Image (cartoon, rainbow, N blue to C red):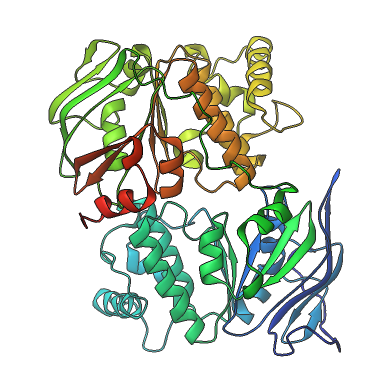
Amino acid sequence: MTREDAPDPPQRHDMTDDRNNFILAMRGVTKVYPGVTALSEVDFSLAPGEVHGLVGENGAGKSTFIKILSGDIRPESGSVLLDKVAHSGLSPRQALDWGVRTVYQDDQLVDELSCAENIFLGVHPAGGLHRRRTLLRAADDLAARCAINLPMGADAGSLTIPERKLLAILKAMAAKPRVMLLDEPSVALDEEGKRRLGGVVEAARREGVGMVYISHHLDEVFAACDRLTVLKDGRVVARRERDAFVRDEVVRDMIGRDSGSFFRRRSGENRAEGEVLLEVSRLASGRELAEASFAVRAGEIFGIGGMSGSGRSELLETIFGVRRASAGEISVCGRRLADHSPSQSLGYGLAFLTEDRKRTGLVMERPIYENEVLSKNAAVRAGLWRDGREAFAAVDISARLGVAAPSVRQPAGNLSGGNQQKVVLAKWLLTSVRVVLFDEPTLGIDVGAKREVYDLIADLAGEGKAVVVVSSDIPELAALSDRVGIMRRGRLTHILEGGDIGETAILAHSIGAT
């Protein structure tokens, strides 16, 4: 057994806390990595049935915080308290046995197992679940309790990203936890998915489960949480009760400056009278995409909204050639595409940034520079690296995009979410693209990094490229887009322009309320 796995003997810890009925706490926790202090003297407490928000920019220490409470790593100093019993660190087994369950931003499901099997993997309730019928019934009962509807007999690998997130939360609930650590639980969820998530949180609250709720979406945190702790550079810089949840003040706590124009396009950027670079006519693909028609001009940002399952992502995948079109036409720069592959799309001037950068956008274990030149260089795709040339190009594009890394030889998996998204973008900008398709471009990144991504998207439009943005973040769509197309049940049903673009209108058309 390694030091990481071996728990220290508990010691009684007499102390006063701002909430005397806390079940879990940190006191003076510090974690140091070579060259960086990830957490410094952090105090924190969580009461039964409480939802305690934890916010901060990427790199603020939130991931380290979760790893310490889940037993993945041990702090250099300080205590973790379980039921007021202090430990200098936890092992993963100790955390699990006590009742800590973590829902990570990466869902960590087994694709080859069914939804029901994933839910009860490692959990053995009374009566046993070795029979399929019993397993499915137990999974359906749990889902009904949490107001979630999933195909329990289907393999997890067949689910959409929002469905996988809900399944991961059900898996945590199946273990009857005392504490749940929720890391970006609403990532990729549309309004309906967020409503269902809220139902799960309330169900857990009623059962006395304490929850640490980590999210970059402040409106969501304000709605769900009883208290809020703000981390910056590994330190607690603010603690707020519900009556002190003020968006601009919390943003200032997080990033050290006002939110200002974070969600406002700069004037003079609408250049929607340029030439048509992308034209889609009556496009269809399988059951998910029934019909979509629109055109995007040089210098224009065309947003696409709609609920989860409306066909938003399938539309971009069909345009790029990931899915085969069953009907309709696609034209890029006046050239018609037919039965095209993703590599052919690249040759036509198309780029596609997928919603799941870690699974389909990056090779996480490879260096930044290899990822950035992957689309440009056929030799690189074949595994024939010319370190000097590729590294030189990567240094240049990384500097242009502001990728925060000590070296382009650092693995992409070591970067924060915002910097990973910049590396994905760099991969395409090193090619001669005219049309850029973004699927959830700010998924799981903080408000400061979001602003940087917004500026990059606006810069692409300013360079005369046609930009298409799919997003489940309605304020983001309303702020970024020159026009917004609405997908509903596989069809592009409306296109909003000018003064008609607004959060209320986007949501109303998305749910069919108009």
